[in-house]
Image (tube, rainbow, N blue to C red; front, side):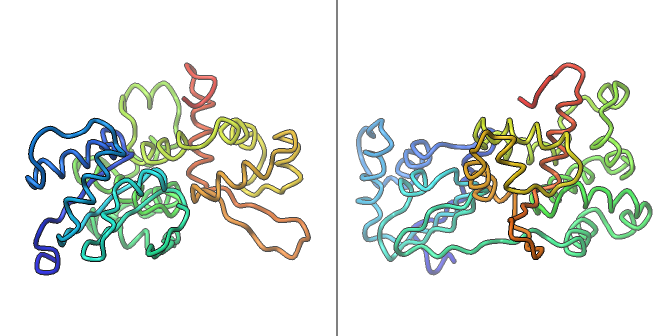
Length: 276
């Protein structure tokens, strides 16, 4: 990569907690490379135009993690064939000319188990197989959730796997007092939840009072006052629901299990009537 992009390679985390904005990324890139002299403009659009001028004859690689929206990505694109951008997003982004989109499917249980065991150690994984499997199920096939959970277990090497698995599902005062922190995988799910519209969040709070993870269009229509299509579009765009083909004339939607568990636990919290 260094040979192909000798003028710079940058990794930037965007929408996650503490992440950068498009304007700050552009300003830092322009300053660090000394591509421009003098003061920088304050607006993101002006910075974007200056960035494209500065890299017009350069070979630069940008890796943008957790892009929030297509407008945000557009501001960061160099606009020249000599540069390349690799971007990840929780949401499905609208396509533009010259952009190749690849959807990463949720991990299977076997893949998630292999990733978790590979990080925390296969012996530790096998010592408590039931608890390890519960963690995998709770992560809902999300690679980031599996890695965050594994990273926490590696930081706390003496912590039994069972203890963390119990903490993810036990909302009792005992667990809250003992843990005292946001469990790593919950942070991943919380960020995804917070990106949903208020209508979708409210619908999820009503869905979790019903059994199962599947929901029909008819059910959604009743829960949303006829706005089911807006909720479906939001969940699918966020990669938090998928269409289930079961031979019925009416579509069924499978909502992400980890998301439903998060909403359910937040609703049960003694100091919170709804997820914040």
